[in-house]
Length: 203
Image (cartoon, helix red, strand yellow):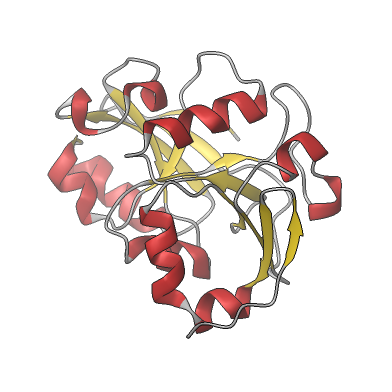
């Protein structure tokens, strides 16, 4: 039997990093279902879900008031790129040098149907990253990419603390993970890798 200490805000359960680690299989199963999480990364707080669940992906768009724009995802491992993306060997080496870390990359998918088309904004490219933190290791065990967009209403600054999260977002996610992880307090650097010539789109 799993004992979990929590506070309920409407549909939301607030949990600690230690609770996730102590009950890892339970939370991996929750990730593999339709649950939406607010969680720490190495840069800022993220909001996300498994990309296979259309309704949960759509809920994130609605919570953020986000119009059509691609969503960043955490991939489970670097090998996922080999299986699913067209990336030159030179660019693969560069990505491997930077991940895990505070970098994000735009890569070309071998098959655009690999992920929810809402995530890619109906394109054949995907925005990927692997944060340098413990939650990314949890995602690795699910074997699926996981949404990793910032916690904010679209067009507003990213939330850096749980107490800064708008009630309309906080109250309608399934889990919020409290953690003492250190952040960089800025978004990851975004680099377009869809051609041999890399383009830095966000410093």
